Amino acid sequence: MKQERYIQQKFSEYTHLSELRLLPGSRFFLTGVKVTKQKGFGLFNVAGYWRRKYQGKVEDEGWYLLTNLETHHTAISAFKSRMGIEAMFKDCKTGGYNLEKSHANNERLQKLILLIALAYSSAIVQGQKIKHRGIQKYVSRLTEPQRSQRRASSFWMGLYGQSWVVGMEFCQDIIAELMRMRRNKLPFFQRGLRARSLILSSF
Image (cartoon, rainbow, N blue to C red; front, side, top):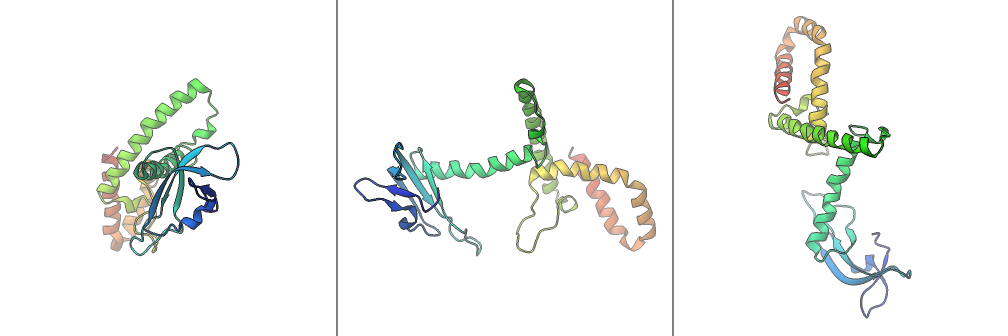
């Protein structure tokens, strides 16, 4: 919920969520709260959470969660799962398999989702192998100065790691010619070829 939302605790007047003064590193959990001044809504629990400053960074704002869960921990844990779920949705749609463009009927869609689930799991496992072997820099973009980790997820690494290898297959003649012409860069070419063989072994 937005912090401008009105809530009313038992025996209290309506207040904005912002008046609860949620600050970085703090949290709260309210039970039996009336949310909004509109009629027709029942009582809910409200969980507030603002992650503490970490590695010199602080989030822009905290979370105000309307929930029927009974504890602060379960409410926050459930909401954190949303981040991974949304990332998975993007991987299965515009970020990877373009599921939304299939226009399949219910029966075919169920079969397609099953295939995607298998392919998705396989790509993640392969991406984790690539990261574990320390050769992700050959597949993913370089890290920006402001980031501590590369942008690419394990899924992206596994999915496009194979594309990277296939692309090299089409460029074999060019690679061989470059290696012949640029002998001073030979160690770098050899590292790339070794990375290719390691990626191939992970499939």
